[in-house]
Each structure stands twice: as structure tokens, then as C-alpha cells.
Length: 168
Image 1 (cartoon, one colour):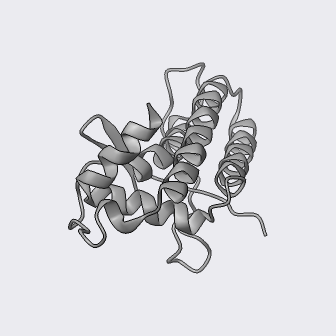
Image 2 (cartoon, helix red, strand yellow):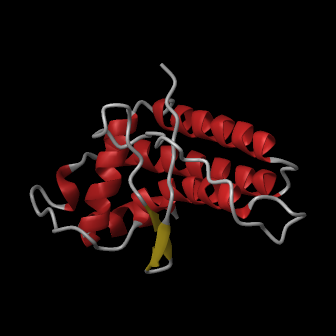
């Protein structure tokens, strides 16, 4: 089963862009859920006349995994087991997955900016989404586990700092 990922808005908190949660088809699993009528058709971009309302959500979707992983403290802290209670191995898998996701995000952000039309941009978004999911699952984590760790890190400064240290 292939997952698609959508994100329609984001804000900046502590130098990290935070987007809306990506949900799976069941509406609860943090991965993806395409909202009906989710492809806006109004608003023009300054970039070669492309539809800004189409590209903006796609760019935000690519930035979301970063936000999920390293967002600032937003939720209540989880002090059970210290640093979220995750093993070193699990956090290393998360760091590897996140590094892959960031590389894909960077690559596709540029490619989306260069897209000539909406159809090409949508195809690139779908390709990027699939590659991001694979980047996570190739490390041995499920997308749900990745999202769980990301959410925990957003509410646990000790866990967030531990992950950031591992990424350096």
C-alpha cells in the first residue's frame, strides 16, 4: 500500500517550520491523508506564472517531516524513562530516517520550484512523498514510529536535544 502525504499550512517555531499533521487513511496515523478538494486553483506565483496555491502546499509538505522530528516544545513533556524512553538504537534509526527525509526534502524543494505546470508539480510531490516514506521504513522504523518519536521530541526538550546531538 502506497501512502500519500499532504500538509496545508505551517508556522515557524524556534527556527523550525511546523506543519499540520500528516495523517494516514484512517485519519489518526501520522503519515498522510489527502483532503478532498485539496488542490487549490487560485492565486498566481511570481515564479514563471505558476499557480502559487498549488506549489505552496507541496513545499510545506516537504518541510513537514523536519518539523515533526525537531519541533520546539509544544506538547506536554514526557518524562517517563528520560529522553522519551527510546533506546539508543531506535533513536539512531530515527536520525538516519530523518537525515534521508531532509535530503529528499531539499532535492524536491528545488525540483518543485522548477516545475513547469501543476501536473508536473503534483507528480514530483507524489514521488517525493513515496521516497520519504521509503527513507523512513528502510531504517527499520515504521512511519507511525517515526511520527511518534517526532511528536515526543517536540514535547520533550531532553529528547529533542539528544536527537539533535546525534544528528551532528
